[in-house]
Image 1 (cartoon, rainbow, N blue to C red):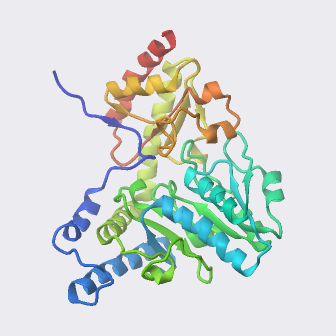
Image 2: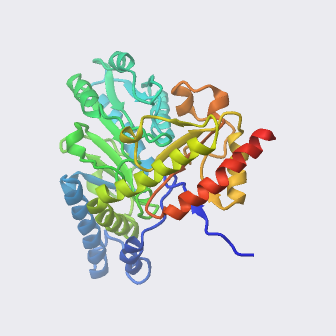
Image 3: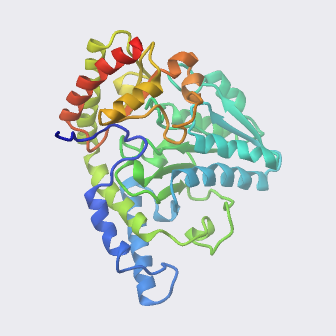
Amino acid sequence: MTSLRTVYVDHHATTPLRPEALEAMRPWLTGAAANPSSLHAPGRAARAAVERARERIAALLAVRPEELVFTSGGTESDALAVCGGARAVRDGEPLRTRVAVSAAEHAAVREAARSLRREGFEPVEVPVDGMGLPDGQGLASAIDGRTALLSLILAGNETGTLNGAIAESAATARGAGALVHTDAVQAVGKVPVRPSGLGVDLLTFTGHKLGGPRGAGVLWVRRGVRLSPLFAGGGQERGRRGGTENVAAIVGLAAALDVVLPRLDEEGRRVGALRDAFESGLRERVPGVRVNGLGPDGRLPTASSVTFPGVDGETLLVALDLEGVAASSGSACSSGTPAPSRVLLACGLPEAEVRATLRFSFGWTTTEEDVVRLLEVLPPLVARVRAA
């Protein structure tokens, strides 16, 4: 029996490590293991590697190196932005206790905002429309003289919907004296992102969503913006994030970005064409199937959130896994739980449809053969699960 290659369509959960990132990391995973805060020669070499990575990432994103804070990943970057930003604002203006986030946020942002309630903050959730975009009236009511921070996701984790109004919303919030954060974890490495051009104060992304390693994230902090550190430490990252820097992961993140960003348009067209072929084939072969979110131009080229009416999504997911297809029922941080997707519910989908929805996310390893295989396997599985 010939074993089939796994069709991996879960790039929004994590993207396989690029070989260029692995090669850049290899010396720091084996021989060069010094602490970058040490003053001896190996320590200085590690520090130099971290700073070279910082400078390269800054150049690629058109920001200042000192504006970049290295963290352990997207969740920590989001928590530092939301909690650290809100606390710093309230320290200067005690009446600013509101933290507003959209209903489409990743759990890392949503739960960070909720955690602040214990400290006297008022978390507020801004409703979203059927596409996952913030409701204008709800956004306006959340921003006033009491708002410390507003957080709006740049690209949805589940539907891939792009928020093209970030700059406009940021201008309104900053005009009212609030900090503005955007979670760009899914966007960076998939579409062009220039932090300073978005008008926000804080922006987060992470390595493993773009072909870099797990264990390295970035928080961009606009020059002049104050943060309250999440925990005490040795004063690393200009006093904003204590803890020994993960040299190998940071170097790998920079190497992955160095490969990805110059090829962004070309790769976006390639992956987007595969995604479109997949969705077109599904519509032809599976009755009643529906794609969620905006059209192709309003979504990440990697994203396809598909509802199969009359299907139990978890059952279909298991059936796909048995056929060598790795997909997802939603955000990886909430997969495996019985609760339906909060984001899709917030978009107005009935619970039965939410439970009938799977996420297929494409990336640099996706091939035409993968799409052909998906379209061979998926329609009969859907029919079988519906019949059951």
